[in-house]
Length: 141
Ligand SMILES: Nc1nc2c(c(=O)[nH]1)N=C([C@H](O)[C@@H](O)CO)CN2
Image (cartoon, rainbow, N blue to C red; front, side, top):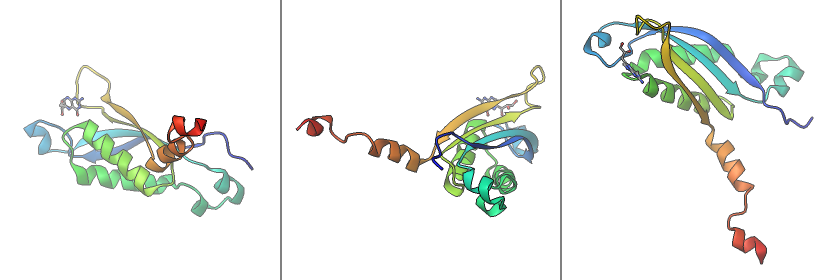
């Protein structure tokens, strides 16, 4: 079957306790992080087979992302989000990752603060480029 739609495997509200923050006092404690992840991937093989081995396994994603947050001990949410996106694109069969990393206890007057980023797999970018003429002048000849 021709796959033209974009499928998504997602995780919402993943809770991780990790060292995060720019201030000295923040380096000595852990704080809660709330993470949402959307992985654009083709789910048609898993949909047909009903086998978890054919699926982008969201349990593995949660385990990896939790471990990376604890290891990285980032100062900025921006750095942590970038590292998580790179790790997901390198380790999972997905074309695009959108994720948000939030600190629900950082600002007393706010419910939650954080960052959201979208990153594309290099191979997907290359494929798009490959379909374009390398030099528009040479195609006219
Ligand atoms: N854009 C950002 N601003 C701030 C961050 C951050 O990670 N990204 N971090 C802090 C402090 O660590 C803050 O959470 C302490 O309350 C401040 N601003």
